[in-house]
Image (cartoon, rainbow, N blue to C red; front, side, top):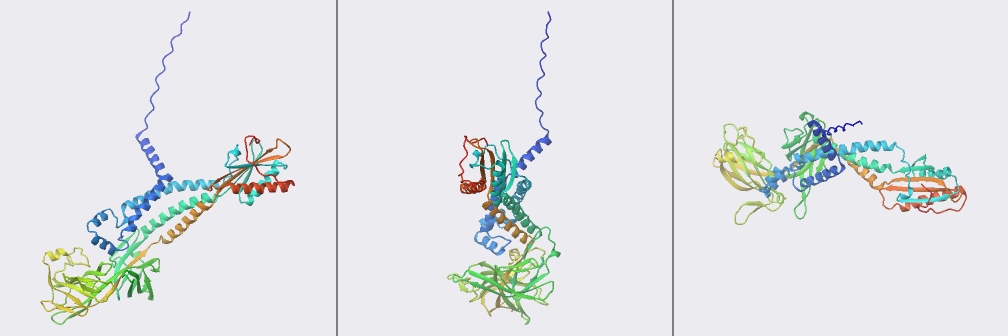
Length: 546
């Protein structure tokens, strides 16, 4: 008797090995990339970008008008600093807006490029074979004809080609069949829409990289040249060099502001003369929505104000005339303006300096009870200035930056500047300082706030925006249609049963179009066979296998 040794127990299965740290990091990156490049993420980022742009439309922006931003700080002294910390006065150049912009850019690339490649392959791919069960398609029907199967398909092919379908004939399992498709422009419009949106972002980014803006206040009779050193404020892209700026010089000859009956500004027009690279001066008129366009630069008028003029007569008879400085509006409704005229050099033998600080009122009136000068109308009907004269040391050569539109309060607090006189002056009136110096308010001129912009991506953005609209129209108006046909012998006679089915994307009401197709096919079959037409009927389970 033989004995069999019991089977040896099998070794326990080893637990699956844990991926290496590098592999886990790679898997997380791939998972993050798939989430970022999903269409849902792109739509969310696009919506988020639109929402992030709202503060830029509701709040004044420094890139457009620093005066309006200053006015907002004056009107909301508590709220404005907090908004400024969140970059809400520089929305479109803020870090958080740039982050959304960059993520949307990457997401669109990940979404659109594979889709465009796939669509390119589809354009050169034949329509798919007919499904096995045509009766399951949304629109279907059958026609009987005495024609042979290939002849019946010839009729269907002719009708479909008239309708601009791309047609392919095949030999199916149960007999000859036909597949047709049209409406590729729908997906082409979809791809064009997203590629144009990507091009739009590229154009905006290019404008920021190679573009620049400069703002300056120009008084009538004065001018400036296109140089960063002359602008009051400017911003430029990281790839902009000062030597690459257009050699453009502009002189402001005259400025006119027109007002509505409620005294709101209706329009600004500025008569200017300009030359490029030392050429012949050209005279033109620009407005708020009618800028000067030359050599890729645009010169806008973004605001206006008043420049009071003073003359100073020293005790020895020396006269300093045509001294002026722009006063910035503190009230846009009445154009009450504040500013300072700094005179660092009073002539030979004088070591002290002089400043005239105050308010300019285009239409002056005294506030009842307090006697302070104010303005009741933005038009210069009764111009006056409330002037305070200081003498001493202005601190202009101290190396510390200070505004040209106001005095440094620290200099006054230290006693370097001393107030010596103050008065409300109309045009032509004067006040005499203790040392015999006479300060005269001699008149005023208007100034224009001018902005020079250079955006090389502007044309690119315009073309991309037009392409976005074209792609959107293609998506909305073009239908993607597929039609399938199959012929089998008629079990009740010697004819042929023609089964037709249709599948349409992008349209809910497809019945009339399919009915028109089957009616035309039935009429063509009748004409070809020379018999009475037969109406198409829906496929059912009793129909021949298809």
